[in-house]
Length: 259
Image (cartoon, rainbow, N blue to C red; front, side, top):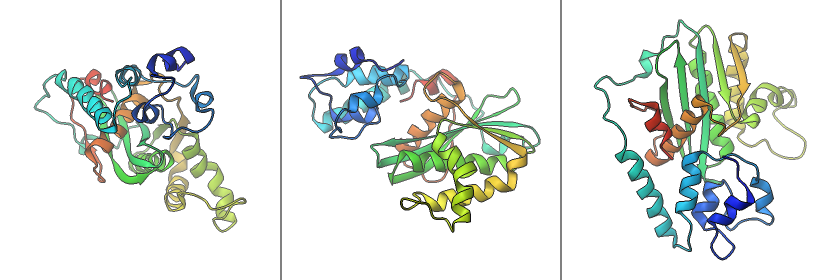
C-alpha cells in the first residue's frame, strides 16, 4: 500500500510517531524536518503497514521491541510444518538460466543491516538466502552486499538476470565505477562510500557482463522475488549471520508473512 497522510495520522499519538514506527518507515529518529514529504507516496507491504498500526502509542523503546517480537511470534506460529526435504544452495542447476532477486535492509540508517536473495531456476520453488549481517551498516551497504552475492552466483551460470530495487547499487557497479576507476577511484565532491565493495563488484561485473543482465525492479510493489529477498534481508538482521544460509520453508506465503 502507498503511504498517505491519512495513514500516518492513524498511527500517530499526540501528533507524532515513536522510534520503531520511524524505523519501519526507513526514517531516522529523532526525525528530520519535513520528514513526511520524504515518504508520502512510498510503498509499504501489508505486514509493514499492519505492524506500523500495532506500534501506535507512546511506548518505551523496550515495549516497542516487545510488540515487534510478539508480532513475529504470531507470524511464526502460523507457519505450516516444514517438509523433510530441505533446500540447499547446491541444488541450484548452474547449467540453466537463473533469475536472482537481491535486496538489503537496515534497522536505522546506519544500523543493523542484512542482505537477502531469492534464486529462481526453471519451475522449482525459489531458493532463499540470507546473510552479510553488519552491526553498523547502511541501506546502501546492505544493497551492495546483496548485489555482489548475486553476481557471485551468476558467475557460475551460463546466463542470469539479476533484479535489484536499488538504482544506487546498479549504477555504482555498472556506470559510475567506470569513471571513478579512470580517475584512480576518486570522484568530485568527496570520498566514494562503500568503495571496497564497489570495486570488487565492478570487477566481477566486468568479467561476466556478457552473460548477465541487471534490471531495476520497484521495491514493495508486490513482485514475489523482490518481496522474498526483502524478507530474507530482514531475517539476516534477526539471525545476525554473516555467512549466507539457506532459509527452509514449505510455502511462500509463510515467508511473505515475515516482517
